[in-house]
Length: 409
Image (cartoon, rainbow, N blue to C red):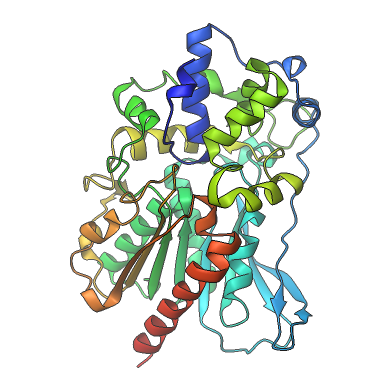
C-alpha cells in the first residue's frame, strides 16, 4: 500500500489528502461512503455531518494558575467578526490592563482552534492574548464568497488591525507562512501594524528543506490530480450548503474504510504522529476531547491553493509570492524580532522547514533572532503538552519579554 511509504508528512489535512488520494487512486476507489466506516465514532461523525448536523464544537480549556496553585477564571470576548472567523480575547480575572498584545494565528488545518488551549494558558496572564477562531467551512454561507490564500491573508490582517499596533504575532503550523508573508508586506509599507515580534511554530516556510515524500509528490504532480477526489459540496441543512470543501472526516473515513478498526487507528497514528512518540499523552487527550474525530471542514480554495503555493511551487521561499498585488519580500523585514521553533521529531514540518525563515530575512539583526529545535518533540508537542509548557513556552515568553522591552524604549 502506497500510504505505508509516506514517511514524513506535510501539515494536517494536506498530509492526509495526499496519502488518501494516493490510496484511492491505487485502489481505484471513489470518495468515501459513511456506511463503509468501521469505527463507531467516525461513522457517527460522518453520518451526522452528511445529514446536515454540525460537528461538535471543542471548547477552549484555558486556565491560569496563581502563585498559590489555585486556578483563576478566564473569560472570553470577541473583538472582531467576519463570515470566516472571529478574533477572541482571553481575559484572566484581575489581569493587568497594560499587558503586551499577542495575536495567536490558529492554523486552518481541520482542528478546532481550541487545540491551542495549552498555548494560550502558558502566555497568560502576562500577555494580552488574542486568537483567531476560524469557522467551519460548512457553516460559511456561499454568499460570503471564496476563501483562498488571498482571503486568508486578508483575514489575518483584519485581526491584526482589530488588536492595533505593537503586537507580537504567533503562527502555528499551517498559518506560519502567512504570518511571515504578512509581516514582510507590512514592513515594506512601513505600516504601523508591523509586528514587534513574530514567533513561528512548526510550519512549512520552505517545504523543500527535508522534503517529505508526499511533499515531493505534490511538487511533481499536475495541479488537481490529488486534490479533486478529496473535495465535496456541503449538502443542504448547513449554512454553507453549496460550498466546496475539504471535509474534516474524509481522511478518517478513508482510512477506516480501507482497514479494520485497529489497523485504521494504527495507520492514522503513524501518519499524524499523534499517538506514538513524545506527544502520545497529548494525542490521547486530543482524542478524548473529540478534537481528532470531530474535525472542521476546510474551504476548498484554501486547501488547493496552499498545496500549490507551499508544497508544489514554494512561492514564499522562492520570493515569488504575490499578495495584495505586490511580490512578498521577506528581506524587507528589519525591525521585527524573529523566533522559530521546531520539534526534533516533527514529521509534519521537519527541522529546517521553519527555520528557513531566518535565511529569508537577512536584514534582521542577529540579536533579534532566535531559532530552537526542541529535543524529543513531535509536531503537536511544539505548541501543547509538557514540551510546550515546560521548555518551549518559557523560552518563547523570555523572547517576547526581551523584544517588547527593547521595542518600548
